[in-house]
Image 1 (cartoon, rainbow, N blue to C red):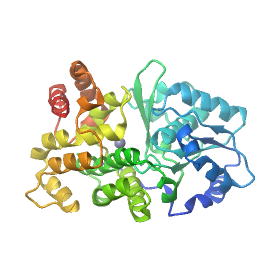
Image 2: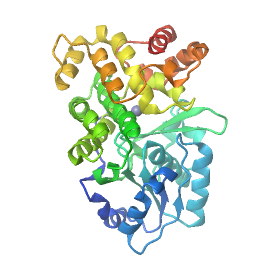
Image 3: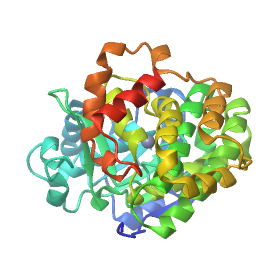
Amino acid sequence: MALISYMSRVQFDFGALRLLPEELALLGVKRPLLVTDPGVRAAGLVDRALAALDSARPPIFEETPSNPTEAAAEAALALYREHHCDGVVALGGGSTIDLAKAVALLATHPGSLGDYAVRGGGSARIREIAPVLAIPTTAGTGAEVGRAATLTLKNGRKIACVSFKLIPKTAICDPELTLSLPPPMTAATGMDALSHGIESYLSTWENPPAAAIALDCVERAGHWIERAVTHGNDREARWQMLMAALEGGLTFQKSLGAVHAAGHPLGALGYHHGTLNAILLPPVLRFNAPAVPEKIARLKAALGLAPTEDLADWIERLTARIGLPIRLGALGLDAALIPELAEEASHEHLSETNPRPATAADYRRILEAAF
Ligand SMILES: [Zn+2]
């Protein structure tokens, strides 16, 4: 049984960004650090956030790397301390929100990030962090309501910090901010949202409210992702995909499975998280299907598939249609790395809640099928 806990405050609609000043005031934050990245700045979204803040001009850390690092978290923390900040506003995708969580953690905790990694018992050491207000600019990770932050340490090790304390106190979800997201990013982040719904629904942990949210996430993402990719200005599609992403994040407390377990070591090589999930979903579903036939049937119903259709095949065709690669080989992965990646995947904490126990040998077969 998973712990059932919903405590995020979410402002969700077109134009919600204008609520930023009052939401910061409700959190008691007077001097926020704005964490963002160069792409978000280039898309004009930093200017929009600053316009919402009116006269206040917060210090800005905009060097968030595409996969967040301990070095970036420490650089942002230095800025936070220099300006005596009392909270963090994350404006960006999952990397930016994860980095903001890490900064807020380090601002109130001794030691370094590695001390708080979930592997090694770090979750128990996480107390109250500085308040985080998350404003997602992609529709995918659900990090705005998620309890995990994934970062690469200075020694190259990729870690996850996992705690309910890491959930942003407030999320402002404004679909307007996702209208300018280019098709490849819309596709990759959207497949991440879909994978969250599917994986959390299939996970071994019982949490009926989260399972219901997961099915709704799958239905929305499956129905709207193609439209959001091909018609980026379709406001309805953008609203639905941002809601699917939020719902995917709300289901994390039911945990995930082998797609994310196999995706993490691959992500450490620099490949996009959502693209990896899209590629890994079909072989993982083929591996899991015999263990959870009723749940697979429910997922197919949510997606509007006929009972005779194969879910894995459907996802593979969808992935190709929205312009993403469907094989790891197409990403340039060296096949010789597969045994090592499989071994790492089998030790990931998310592997423990996969509906069918997966050994290193199983991951090897999954990765070979995905190659
Ligand atoms: Zn994910």
